[in-house]
Length: 149
Image 1 (cartoon, helix red, strand yellow):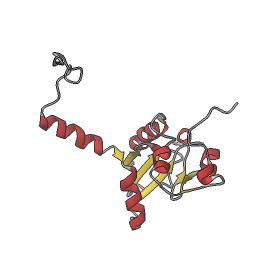
Image 2 (cartoon, rainbow, N blue to C red; image 1 turned 45 degrees about the horizontal axis):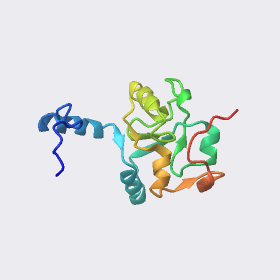
Image 3 (cartoon, rainbow, N blue to C red; image 1 turned 90 degrees about the horizontal axis):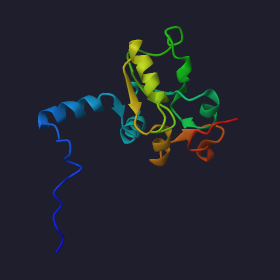
């Protein structure tokens, strides 16, 4: 007969009270955009979004979300954002979950007064979930960033 374990790593730190958990998860959702939700919004033709690819120009040229504009994260400043709409939500993406380029760009853009959400999973999860891409390589482009010597 197997003995019941006396200790749970999952419960080593107790979960929050339901009210605190609700507040936390709602706050988290206010910072992130889901790939499936964005796919549906684009399919419906929703116009209240601007999608920004913050990778470098070459990576954008090779493969990007079809509706996205290129705006490399290292070029975001108060002097360069004049053409971005402040009345739309800006959805920002980079390579994928291991890349913090979109997080950095969202921080810069929000500090400059823009409403932003980071696309969960970036371009990697967009492609994995069947989102349309454009570019010189399109679907044949590498899925992940690689250091180029």
